[in-house]
Length: 221
Ligand code: C5P
Image (cartoon, rainbow, N blue to C red; front, side, top):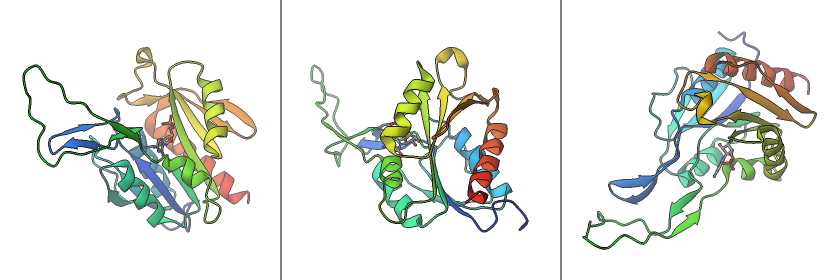
């Protein structure tokens, strides 16, 4: 305790899915177990970082040793991240729903034979892009994830530029990889210098590698 490479560093991260309510009993969401986010939170805390862990409703409980902020929607997640700044680094591992339903119904939508609900959607805030492009108070290192199924490196490299973040951890989530919901991950780290593919490993090992890489980058400044 206290002697870790990240001690004295404050790191904000997001994890898990967001739930965007349709009515009191229904929501839309992306698939996310929260397993990789949990592993990252644990790895950062193991190196002594002060970790603000903003999480949507994940299937697994958050790790010990982090400051947990529970949220439900993308808008709540954004507000919690902004409230947690300033920070040395920010890591966005949440699977944020891209859209929310424009009008959340206060009462349960009735199932009426022969009619279907007409749901209108609007875009959720892109939390990673917003933090990466802050004019003031931007964390020194902003890291995002890219879950891709094809042309992983090309798509993730384009995403890094579009979002304005420093690093993207790209993973191939094609069903055949078994990564989604599984215990292993195979990632390619995209930085300004290029791309680097890491050997497929347990999510804990990937998280530890990321935490050390982050410590290297913060120490280099
Ligand atoms: O745009 P896309 O969802 O593919 O980007 C994925 C990355 O952006 C992840 O790091 C995710 O946590 C982050 N993200 C976000 N807010 C959104 C959508 C994605 O922070 N609304």
